[in-house]
Length: 117
View 1 (cartoon, one colour):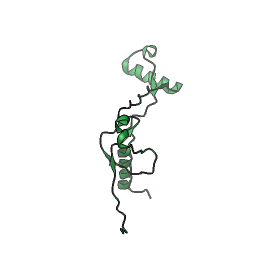
View 2 (spheres, one colour):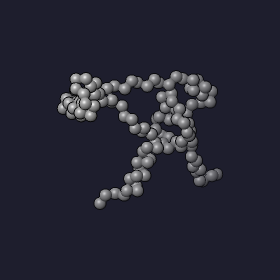
View 3 (cartoon, rainbow, N blue to C red):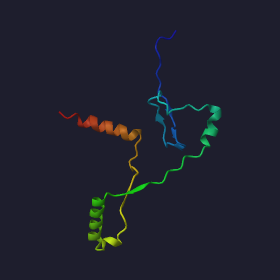
View 4 (cartoon, rainbow, N blue to C red):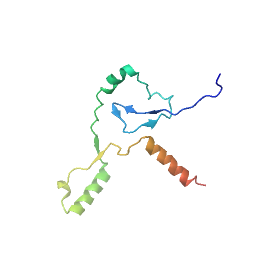
């Protein structure tokens, strides 16, 4: 009878919302529900699914005072009247890629900097 339990690392190609990640990565937290093992006989059907389309980026108007400041700055830089400059809008999309690499790099930065005393 074997008393020691062998612990192995599991590496997998992650497929999130129909988009496959480019490289293999280690399955860190197998108890989370975003991991699902697909049986071998269902792999082809799973791979053939269409990825979810990217939603369009919603834009909102700037607050009135900030809008006026941006328009005045652009008018000053371009030498135009504020009525001829297009309305500034703010995209509601975050351009930062938030994946496991980003969070691990943030953790490494915190470790290198140390804790403030």
